[in-house]
Length: 111
Image 1 (cartoon, rainbow, N blue to C red):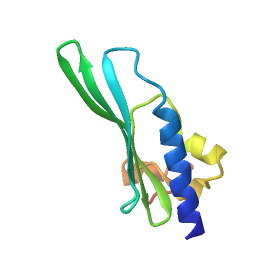
Image 2: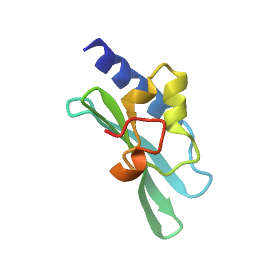
Image 3: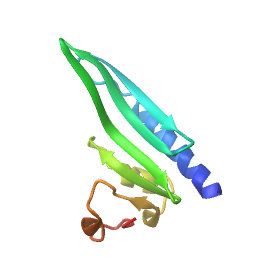
Image 4: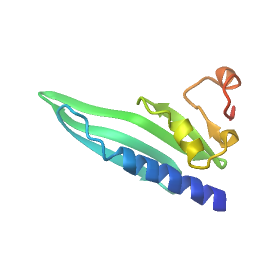
């Protein structure tokens, strides 16, 4: 349980830090979304650029079975490497945005 709590804290701290960066365009709110009961964590962009609604999810992370699943990374940040730098073992990170077949060719867990 200690590892799970550590991973929750690391993911939340990462997303809170990321959410401080506001997009350079439009009136966009950066919302960190935490479901700490089901372990779903996201960043959501919400707002307007001129007459266009902006609603997107550049980062989606889940914690399943004491592993951190990077479900989506639409940023230029290497989130997996950030997690490793902060003490997460590569065997506890799953690149969920890759197919299970492709995951076996990475240095991270297949799932």
